[in-house]
Amino acid sequence: MKEAAQANGMGIKPLIRVLQGQREEIPPIWMMRQAGRYLPEYRQVREKAGGFLNLCFNPELAAEVTLQPVRRFGFDAAILFSDILIMPLALGRKVEFLAGEGPKLEPMGDADALKGMRDQADGDVFAPIYETVRRVKAQLDHKTALIGFCGAPWTVATYMVAGEATGDQAPARHFAYRDPEGFSRLIECLVRGSIDYLVGQLKAGAEVVQIFDTWAGVLPPEQFDRWCIQPTQKIVQGVRAQVPGAKIIGFPRGAGAMALPYAELTGVDGLGLDWMFPRSLARDILQPHVAVQGNVDPLALLAGGAALDREVDDVMTLADGPLIFNLGHGILPATPIEHVERMLKRVRGN
Ligand code: CP3
Figure 1 (tube, helix red, strand yellow):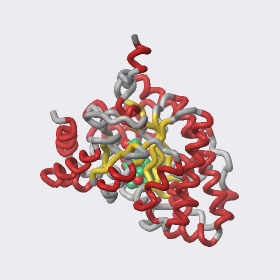
Figure 2 (cartoon, helix red, strand yellow):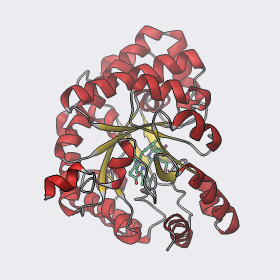
Figure 3 (tube, rainbow, N blue to C red):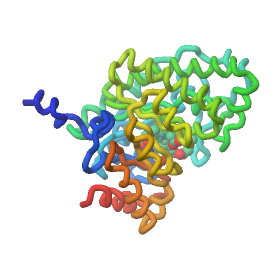
Figure 4 (cartoon, protein in one colour):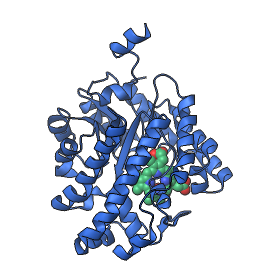
């Protein structure tokens, strides 16, 4: 019976079905940064853990905050609680999260700084994260999928080079123009580390992985191809060589006109759209090739009311094709919980 159910798609979780190219009557829904500061129960656990990184490396508490938004809202996916900047830590770089200021790393001004870095990621750093994945997986029901993730090499490199978020990521872009060979060594190192890390998460029980390229949009087309598309393509191929058929979502924020080549050349199953991406183009040009995910403006969710309703309805124009309902970037910490409830009600019609 169980096999028959799986053969006709009944036993497959809705998020996975959409990534196989099918359409769901009510799209599966989750939110980027769904485990986070807008939830009082998250703030409480972070306090108990004694800071953000301690929380990331505590499997019991990290599993708890991963599950909090799923319990509260009944999302169709849980996303592993961790951070993309675990990767530089595993490569032997210093990373700190200062409350209210965001991440701080030792900047890498030039290729000389690569000497102070491991060329193989330290598996001991990833071990507690895999343990979180196992614990979450054991607690999920039959319809909720578990998403693992990493930062794309370009985005992780922007933080490693500048040492912090800078807006236009000028330090990394400057490095890449000045010394493409040196920069390429950094990117290759991140490609290898990301393959290991994603394979580790998939083997621990993640059913989908998302590659966050938050800073893809600052790259002009030729650079976009070299530092965003090509490394992502290598990760997708490297992961699938070890986990055949692995389901992968790419989120090249700000890709604009490069979204279609990104989807076609990387081979991702799902394309995360930022809030700026025109939905008519997503429907006509992207959905024939790839499932799309997105793309409510996080500020419309913050505002709520009629502005939010209009935004939700506009995203739902994509529901005639394969759609994962999501935001166009992470939820903002000041977002009222009632606005999330309102959005869910409008999507699900209950
Ligand atoms: O709920 C989830 O989405 C899972 C956990 C998750 C976090 N970060 C937790 C987090 C995920 C998937 C990320 C990804 C991430 N981290 C990205 C890519 C996505 C994006 O939002 O652009 C980036 C660029 C980072 C790096 C990072 N981490 C920054 C720039 C910051 C500071 C800014 C901020 O939002 O505070 C973080 C901190 C961070 N990562 C927090 C959380 C919940 C806030 C830390 C806290 O609790 O104080």
